[in-house]
Amino acid sequence: MTDTKWDAAVIDSGSIYWKRNLVISLLGSFTTIVAMTLLLPFLPLYVEELGVSDRAAIVQWSGIAYGATFLAAAFVAPLWGRLGDIYGRKLMLVRASVGMTVAISLMGMAENVWQLVALRLFVGIAGGYSSGSMVLVATQTPKDRSAWALGVLASGIMAGNLVGPLIGGALPPLIGIRGTFLAAGGTIFLAFLATTFLIKEERSPARKQAAKASGGWASIPDKAPVVAMLATGLLLMLANMSIEPIITVYVAQIMEDQSRVTMIAGIVMSAAALGSILSASRLGKLADRLGHWPVVAGALAVAGLLLIPQAFVTSAWQLIILRFLMGIALGGLLPCISAVIRHSVPDSAAGSILGLSVSSQYVGQVAGPVLGGFIGGHIGMRAVFLGTCVLLIGGAAYSWVARPRDATAPGHK
Image (cartoon, rainbow, N blue to C red; front, side, top):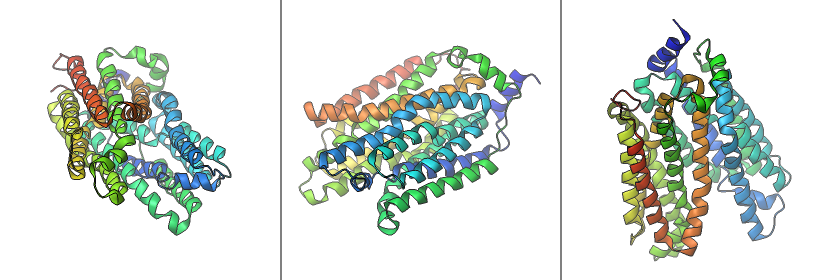
């Protein structure tokens, strides 16, 4: 069998170990995301413990420390993806789990806020386990099960984002902030052991040479679907994050009992994540059956329309229900984005392009809160919801126009 035919066979039939790889990637992604997000509830307290006393400076340093990871990751994700194409995707997961074990454990030993920020930057540079696992699962899973498998993995990643802050709120009173970091590092070390000894990656004999020679982006025959998915990933994160800075203030405007504002705001923030967790694998399975493009366009359109009533709610429970429904709609996007990219690029360039997709999502994750906070502060809260609605509806139209017309193209049945 020629190398090209070998690659095609792997894409269609997948690795015989794909189910095992999915389970280990799911557990590893969940634990690493929990470890990355558990510091949210106590980050300002830790910044204060490290010697920052001014209240405004505490808030500022907390934001810098939290955003540093995503900023660094946005720059290096394509690099790690390309190295994964050349040297193997499993190796990138091993590298990420080792790097995160060291960095997060060292956070518990930081002596000043500069060291904390530097270590958060290092997590962004050396990490990337969840994005690397997306690449591994996408390239090792049978083609007709890929969106479902990626949906399961996306559910685990979103569950980590939901559970992490809860654990971060419960552990420090029991073992202290520094002990919490050490416990998180130990948990990621277990993920490193499982990744090293249990994941089995099947690789084309000529993939290393092909990846070196392909040039990544230049090797893609039809770039329009890939560009559409990069834009969709950016929109997905922007839509999620643009609302985050204003939720607490928005809830305070529609509630009479101000003593419950923080609790209700937390429920509103969690509602969308819970909806996405519940829907990701189901929408991924639907995409495997109907095609990825109708699901992508439909999810963007439905999410956009759900933003309109959010701008005019009169009670907190209405906002909670609408955010939950919006999470259900958006839950299918991550697996579909990865599946379309995987099926639109050569195997030798899959890692680098999926890494570029991760970078575009991080751009949305950074830009969303900035834009949402600016618009909400200068124009009004409703403008954030309605402006994001326009972006999502436009994204739905663009993805529908950009879809391949060929019935045999990726995403069509």
